[in-house]
Length: 178
Image (cartoon, rainbow, N blue to C red; front, top):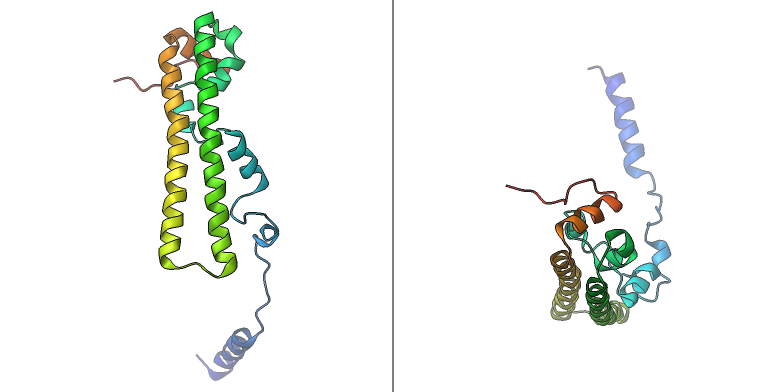
């Protein structure tokens, strides 16, 4: 390689290496005004309401109906009066528990946010806080999944198949059979 080819390349590298780095705005910049930085308003509202937030998709998409949707489809599923009562009771109990857990998650997220905001976070408080939040999130997901499991046991096989058809999941019950 001749010197006249190397020199322009070296000059270009020098220009690139010494060029000022332009600041790139973070995609999180609009999060700074949040009450709790790690939770959007929608997430907070969903946690307060005890909403499913997709936490039970493993059940829902594998043939285990959720009580809210079963109630919505009660006539089409031809639920008995007893099934309707049990489903409503199950849904109400799940919602009550989910709201309680959701409130605890919000509180713990606010504490974590506050510790960082005050500059008071330590390794120990970080570990404690994140462990507590993770445990609550696991408890919430388990609650939703367990409710789908219980709901599925309350329905007949025909109702489960019909539920999945009505929800657009296909004609089978969603289970893998051996």
